[in-house]
Length: 117
Image (cartoon, rainbow, N blue to C red; front, side, top):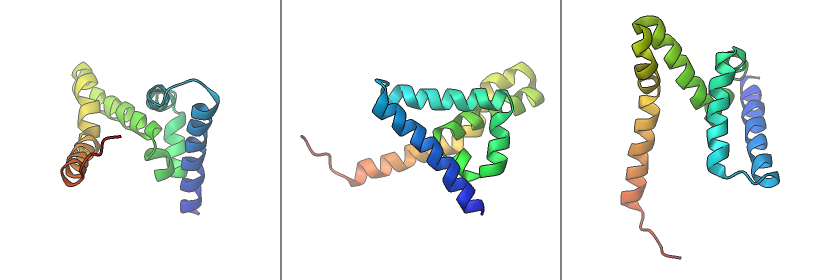
């Protein structure tokens, strides 16, 4: 049942993004930003942690999950370090994922040849 919940949650988040792309004039960059910001805001009001508890990876893997990680890291760092945690928390929490994305992008860039259109 855990996989079904993750699939449903992730699928609904992707469906919303696809509808926004198809039915509005929003650019993908604006939709990406809206997803991350909505993850932060939903975490701040306490809704997203409950969704993560229910859906697991279906809620943490999409872009809203990145916003959730930023907000959670900031809250934890502020509780430990005070106001300095506002700057260190999000960076510390998401450094592994961002580092992996950069590393794998570099690997693909080195292995693949670009083609002109």
